[in-house]
Amino acid sequence: MAGALSSTIHGNLIARAVSSSNPKHPLFSHRPMVVAMSTDQSYWSSVNADLDTHLKQAIPIRQPLAVFEPMRHLILSAPQTSAPALCIAACELVGGHRNQAMAAASALRLVHASASTHENLPLTDRPRPMPRTRPTLYGPNIELLIADGIIPYGFELLARDDDAAENNSNRVLRAIIEISRAMGSQGVIEGQYNESQYEESEGEEIFHVGWLQNVCRKKEGTLHACAGACGAILGGGSEDEIEKLRRYGLYVGMVQGILSKVDERKEWPVKEVNKLRDLALKELKDFNQAKVKTISILVETRFCNL
Amino acid sequence: MAGALSSTIHGNLIARAVSSSNPKHPLFSHRPMVVAMSTDQSYWSSVNADLDTHLKQAIPIRQPLAVFEPMRHLILSAPQTSAPALCIAACELVGGHRNQAMAAASALRLVHASASTHENLPLTDRPRPMPRTRPTLYGPNIELLIADGIIPYGFELLARDDDAAENNSNRVLRAIIEISRAMGSQGVIEGQYNESQYEESEGEEIFHVGWLQNVCRKKEGTLHACAGACGAILGGGSEDEIEKLRRYGLYVGMVQGILSKVDERKEWPVKEVNKLRDLALKELKDFNQAKVKTISILVETRFCNL
Image (cartoon, rainbow over all chains, first blue to last red; front, side, top):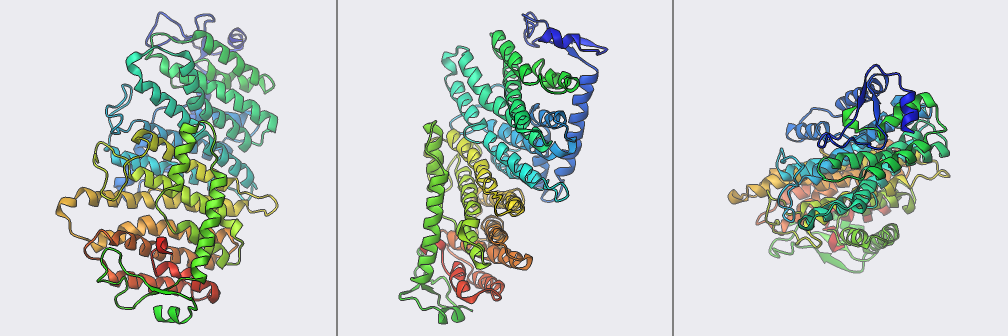
């Protein structure tokens, strides 16, 4: 499948993606991976640029600055996730216009920023920040509250996207339900909980593939599945297309989740990633193949390297 | 106004409400306050019973129990707030049916439970729980995550209330925006922030009426204003009715907020409460007076005493 992909790529610059922390082990050792650095990269750059512009307009700098300055900063500086971009790409893949998915993509970025901020809080039962997290910038109490304020703002952005001219209320409500479920106790929260359990037992650390799968399925997987489904819903996709892009998102999220944790681990599951990539690409086979080439890059490399 | 109210009350049992911590100072020393204990009380009891039933059905006990058991407990045991009941009463006041506001009332209870749980977290920059809070039941990390999961669940409940037969998508979306704004950085979160600033300066404690007003306006006031507006929106009220019930809710919330903080303070602002009560009752003068009698009890006594 990777071979088929690379043969369709006409990029000017081809790069082999490797694990940054472990250059001796290419990410996909069984199948050398190629990434086109032109058309595909410019697509994702334009999606991200549009999303940034939209977010900056949507998040006002206003009084009280003690609230809105850190809110804006925590949203814009949160760790990168490919879920919002996938949401927009899924919308365009089913024939929708980018603007139809922009509010949902922004909401996804906000709820993800909130979850990341809370992950980083130093609570009394986890007194030291986890190794890969940053120090709190504004003090734990402020960051707790700001992140609490970010979640409803995400839902507000999405609910405000209701457009009488487009008669899209039902699609917007459906997207709200999708994001609610993804962020809730059977989605990202469950993943965070499972992840924290592992952190707590770190003394006896063995790298469990099962644990990694489970965390990535619930955290990154659920978020991306939701992103794929929301994009397809808002772009007017059929139920079949919505479910395909939901499953594609799940696999993308799991791959992205695994790749994001690879750098910190001695071992990482090559077979698992290859299996997920194959499953992901199967979900795309009935879509417009010109667009598929671009969207499928998300199971080929880390989004932050695009 | 209180006199006008009491003259319309035909309750069997009349009680004078007093500050529980300071029996020498009745709550409304300028105007003795009476509370009907029959018709009005049974109205609020039935509203709360219906809400409890709805919530228990809406919050499943399912796997993983480690997530859903504390979630259910934290929601059902959260401090009482009159906002959800006001939402239902406002809906009925404008001629709507109780069921039309039940999902929004449930969402209000959920987001309030989440905010209360986060208020109680022992963070490293507020290592001791504040005097009136409970110890964490499940450990800070779990309570952080559970409360994070409760907020989106509230929005999900509301978004799912969309009923094609009733064609109420636009009302539901409007209610989602109302709740988002109320819970966000210019509402409850701002109130919590202001409250935490006071807690931090407790060494030099003087009871500031201005501070109390500000905190109660943003916390309880905004939540109740939202509740009044949502109830009126979902019940099909006119724009004028929605705004009146929004303002009524603001005053109710401020009174409830002040009364809830009275017990811990040596002084409390009688004049302020009386002024808010008068403002509140003015907002109700154009509504059905039989129903007004019941709803106006919310500015007469603490909701938890009803």
